[in-house]
Length: 447
Image (cartoon, rainbow, N blue to C red; front, top):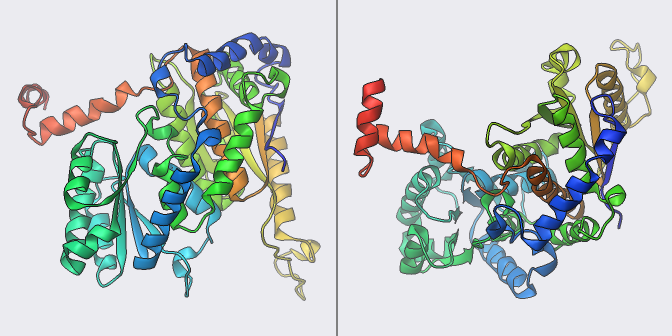
């Protein structure tokens, strides 16, 4: 099997080839710091060799739990926020039928999501749709007290227990949490839920290849062994022993930092495949939470082309020149649709008759790339030979290790997230949570 390809040849409009290769030493030192654990946040490097070290016993246990949920449930609600759900959703949506919810007979449960926001209407409507359905819950939380998932789980757990009783509910709830501590761990042990461990040395945004992601992905019927195999192959291909010129992760990190030094402060992760939308959402958290510190960091955003070319294309082409693009390409379509010939040619598309829709999309991609490069938007291309679990696993690990390298090159700790707590403190104070009396008084004085 081949490895995903990186092409940085069209990034030179924002940074020269010499500038990128001048960062070779910095990139290699950052990669070595990851491998020898000498950099900031080294307590959270459990993801680094995870693909090559995942135990057969753990994979079997995950597959067994997934099979048990598939037997009992037609719907499984994944409860989590941030890294506790984004990786799952990215993989499930990339590798599932585009109209999965509308399919008739199914082999696998529908995967729904909760706990990723505080939407009252959403939670009410979710409860309504689950009435009379065979549903289960995978609750993913290190502590069990994070507001959004804790609130959703409280509601869903009560609904499930009222519908099927506590004994049956016990078989339909799985907790993915800390190995020994926290409210969710205590509840799981009290109620007898099946549990999986979130490793202490793996942060949420790097956790998709742990039970956090692997369990719900397996419930969706996706081969997690292929996902792991792809990640393991890129782990090997991006090791500290791989020269810079051949190391796709080190080169991606270097070109990003070279462009940033040239004033390119916004990176758009674009795709021409609708199933990759949530890969972009997962990637935004990975890079935003890892690099956005100390008043530094490239702002990560994403776009779905050609859709967003009809809304944001003008700004990308002619707006402020502070952007660059990283485009995920999929070389081979899984299905083939041919453009039909139409008598009269009222829509003017007969020149495409007999050609595959995928070819039209590919030409749209190439045309967009040329236009944006001409408009001084540096372009980086990442190509997947096809969209399957093996190559998605490669893509996930590639972005993870490149993020670690890039963060060290930038001079930040890519494994903490101190800024995430600021809104929580204010929210708790406004809700008069016990222990936040001083904060409540301070906020009251400001309002």
